[in-house]
Length: 517
Image (cartoon, rainbow, N blue to C red; front, side):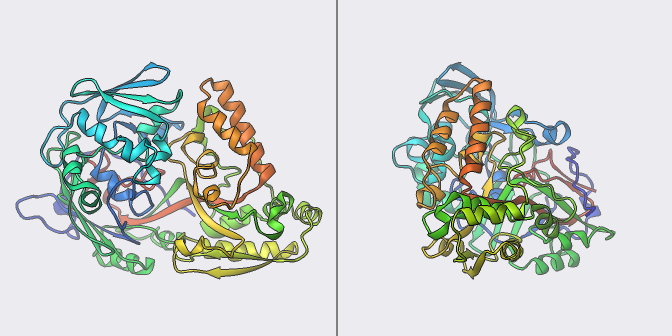
């Protein structure tokens, strides 16, 4: 596959008249950006909109105190952070971090952002109290002990234990600053319908499951937005989104199939963009059920999969296997030599035999239209398992909520690396005792959880490395899940739209990342 990923260009908006397909402006000469998406989030409350369809919207409505420099990471690799709404972030002592705020950040309601907005965002009821509004608030910030203001532009974050990745957390999911005044007046319901942040675009209208319109926040501290409106339209069928791009109805379309994006390679006006994501799909086992109680059988299932054949058949020649739930951006903690579960059908048969597998039927339950390529992936895996003597049956459901109901042995889920560290996603987050797999009872380990607990409070680099490698080893011993592949997003857009997509489901339409002509 030769689809190329566009480099980030920071040129200002130029010559929108060269784009006749983009809706014309009246007094405002900037274009309207029209985007066809597979779905819209059911809510715009940012902690409730952490999803592939929600993050692309909220990333433009809200800012964070600190920010990942995706452009530098693309050029140099590794992980890089930069000040954003905060001008500095300093660790005062092992349990406190001090953020100095910019004084020129204007919220979308016209007021200037102050410490009060940060305190409201990171309040106990939203993030770290005994009972929070959403589970997502606690994922990155449940370790907070308090957040205090030292004047209108200084905030102190206090943690229950030392946290070596606090800057990464503040640049990641959950750290989106909202208007304290709006939240006090409108509450959670108002946040769900039309939240107020400090990002480059404000919510103009929201028709659930149909259409979402953002309009430019022209007093944005980071520069005047390059388009006057962004219109997101829900178009569930990928073929319809692609047809709309060809017809000029849309300027950008999301969630294409690889072959659809590849078909644009020689098109003179539109192109396909392939985006490798810090994201993975897995199948997880209900370790309480039948033969799956034995770790040897789970290991055998994992060794029966030809990962390279599976990945290339679904994602093309650009596929690269994820040998464990880790990404190179982990830096010093990344175990580049980790092989994980290799394809070894003889070993698979031996493990299945030693674990006492007797041909029992294993039920795989999925929602075919939720995860891109999941139906095809499971059908391929069923054949690979059949080759080593494993009997399976596929059940399909309409939505992900029904997939988790009792009665199945194997189910899918996704893993997002919210920030580039083991504490940002994967083994230490999505498979931890706080997350759905264990909370629902599908897997309840002891030693694994103890290693995660130790990793969370370790600060010395050598201790973090030792514990991370021990966690990888324990995962392979327990084999609670099958890592399918790192996910790629395929987008179609007009060639003269200069824009790039980071390795998360964010879409950034700030002036530093969008230009035309």
